[in-house]
Length: 167
Length: 122
Image (cartoon, rainbow over all chains, first blue to last red; front, side):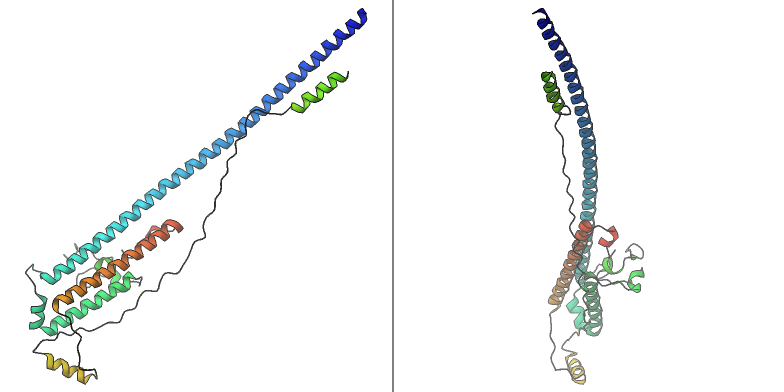
């Protein structure tokens, strides 16, 4: 009877020890697996943060490009408005600022006015060609004097010309 | 002896399990194929000659037309209509130029390239 009790106690003690050892092993293994997964998660998050930062940088570059392109378009529109206004003014006043009546001038000097408006008309058509994508000629590209430029659209046809050079 | 063995197997089956959820991210990158349509050919416009007709030179003009085998007819505009025609041409030119610039800017933005390509004319 006593021997049986001792045997039972031994079994319980051994089982408890084995279970304890296995439990400890299981617990440590679980911790290591958790740690490994956590490290992997950290790497994933770091990678994700890097991607987000790259994306933010790209968005900033896009915003800057959009802003630049809008500015470019605004400049173009302003130049075009100025040129259209200059054309209107050209019909109403001469270079000296005096009032001009093109009809009156044409009735007095039809040949001269005919030549002037023919040249202006051909310049205007050249402007449309350039606006539609035609390449500039060397002459147009290098024009720097008022006498050399296309007076209908110097901003388009004569990139080297600045009105400040010879007024 | 069987009980420890069963416990050992049960415990071993749990080894390696983790309570931390795995984080998964999904990145997809699908760039569109550039359209790459060739730009429209520039227009090539015919030059025209304007003739100013007045009561004083109308006979000379008709003679000139007769000598050059043209019909004796002149299509005319009044001075104010000529001004309007010029302004209309200017508006059309500006519109074409602006549209072309916008098109180039879209191409630059979506397909990349040097910024100078967006401003071909000045």
